[in-house]
Picture 1 (spheres, rainbow, N blue to C red):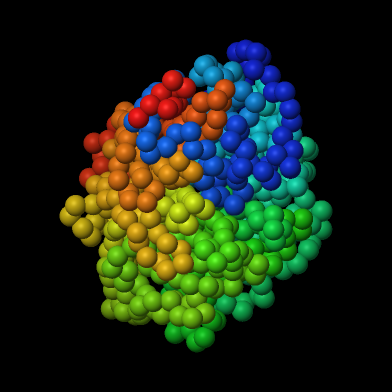
Picture 2 (picture 1 turned 60 degrees about the vertical axis):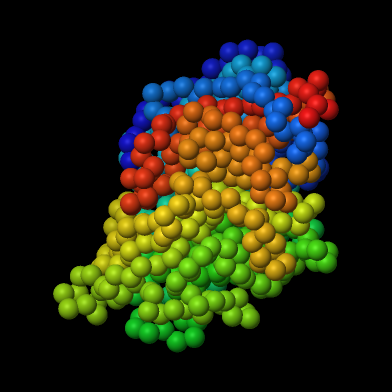
Length: 588
Ligand code: CA
């Protein structure tokens, strides 16, 4: 990965948009219902990405117009995956190469910019992206590619504190938006392809002081207030030998918080290395080769980091089906409190909100090959013939049998967040229909080197599309409608009470769909591929919508035959803001 050295200073250009009020825990708790600001990644810590605004709706969406645009500048335009945060006249966005911008939300004028001073030798696996900031008190927070978390004064951009999450030289980085709960800044880590150990950390938002840590691989010790707390799991219960020490499970996407059960949930990535035969001696019996808690969702106490429950989507994972995809808290049509997640492995899971217990799983992509289904306990019924072969069983001992698996390792769905509408009851899931040739190879751990033990090539499985935005009924698993897109979808989704579903495509279109029929109602060409996360808010009685445009992310780097299909797309780095002018709100 290319490295870049840029000045670690923030420049205050104007002070005209000073914040009037500090953000409180109460503000964060009501973020989903508040239409005049956006204080959390996910538009509420349940991550529903649903706005109760209906000023903009199916009847007047055709009148949505650009209000202003903002260029991130810089000589290197890379994947832009941020979600804007909006508070008291300022918008905060993050950009590729660990940059943070404060922008006057009315005019689009920059107020200040912070560029992290990144060291040489950073090891981001999947583009130099950042997925957004967090806000609390008088500070904004974001992570940097050298695995640090920075707190800045929201008014001036002056650094309040800057802390190391982990050692970037060992392959750690950090790209997701921090989660804030009860005055704690809670972060995960990235680096699952380098044999790191996934961990969740909580810091005092004011001082940056570490409060607790929770490694997610069994055998590792957690901490609380500087002292050892409890061991994660039971040593060697599901991992052979010393492999747990470099066991992966990167917690690389942000978490969710459910105030009703006072639980934070983070997902964990693939166990390391990818070659599953190395993590399970011979033919494991029962659950002994499951490699907990990799490829899992983990419910934790936000005050202590103690694990309350876990749900492993892919035990003995062997296809890079990271279990990190976001957990959305919602109520089903009978009023039951649930979690839902669309996993990399191609299944849409519903879990009980209280204890993480399995409720249902249904495929949300076609032609899934690695499992025949999910049993009544939520455990996959493996298709063992579709596990990449054991290299030690091959004649030359160097390359195991190659198999063609669906989904590809980039997943039925990757990081890009889905949305839930309490109005329709549906989830709107950005999915991809693709497969891969995958094989295993011998590998040994070396600090800072890729630790896969696998080779792969991603391939399309349908001629006319890879991307597929789906409206999914979580109660039945039924796909209500589908929008097919040529290139793989890599942008977040948002839905509104106005009956709209927004997302973007790598081809550059920002699109609004009818939430009930999937009909394309409006679109705008942004000039580069969209891999960012849309938001909407209300300002001076008018409804605004925003999304960042700037092609990049994992697909062009890792997409095999698919990457060739999208390499004509232009790079970019522009935040677009649209509004429905007052005089057109009633027109149709
Ligand atoms: Ca992974």
